[in-house]
Amino acid sequence: MVLRLLLFGLLLLGAAGFGGLAWYGLRPADAPVAEAEAPPARAMALIAARPLRAGVLIKPEDLASQEIEVAAMPAGMRRDTREARAELFGAMVRRSLPQGDPMLPEDVLRPGDRGFLAAVLGADMRAVSVGVDAVSGTAGLIWPGDRVDVVLTQQINDDALPAYRRVAGETVLPDIRVIAIDQALVQGAMGDTTDSNRQVRTVTLEVTAKQAERVAVATRLGRLSLVVRSATGTEQTADQPPPAITWAGDVSPALRAGRGNAEAPPQTLQIFQGAAKREEFRF
Image (cartoon, rainbow, N blue to C red; front, top):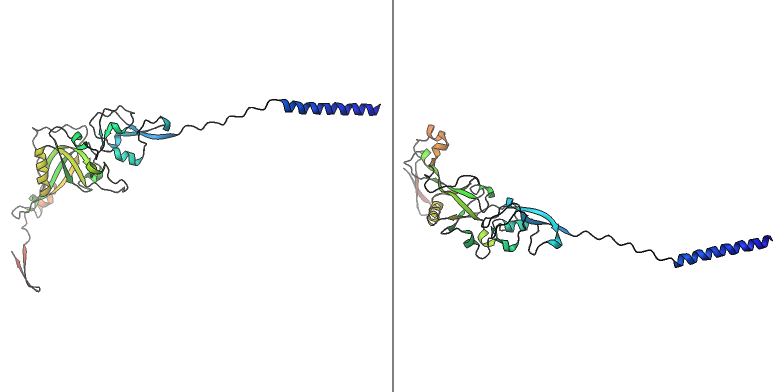
């Protein structure tokens, strides 16, 4: 009796195990878990920081960046890089751009592009370039589109004049528009951007034919400096009187009060006869 019960129990256990295996083998397989999709690639793109009207020259403050999906970028849209910004500085806007619009190639005319100079100059205007250094060129802070005064500083070599009248400064051209910086007319707005300490060497100005003649003469007389005008200042008119001349004595009262009327130092003339003989005369 006990043996029969034992055998019956073993049969029940075997049947249960076999049924469990059959159920596990016949159940539907678990659905595969879908992998999470990678987020779309995004990048910083250059856009107009403010409304830009047609004909203006782009300045650093005119550019801003916006993060957008790479797949949604319009063809030709520039990513926000140092090189891309340098290419746009000084470029002329061909059509009015609202704030937030992308900077597309067809929307701008860059310095060096065919027809840039003719497009950026006003009617009956000329382009003239002046050489400047880090000081006279405002240490590289002038940008295309700025308006400047051209100041001439010259030394007058006349011994009959007192010392305080031998150096003079005057504004030879007021309220002139800058249209290009350095080699912008032929090589791009910023030239070689690899040198972070590059100093401006040439500034191209928009002038009339008569003003171009004045610049040509002024470059032979002395040193030219550029003075940036306020963007909100009043525009210079033709009927306004020219600024007064500033003399050395106006800047340094010591020249007037001290040795301003002192005689000039004697001039020395040296005459050489042969390789060794030299005669010196003072007068």
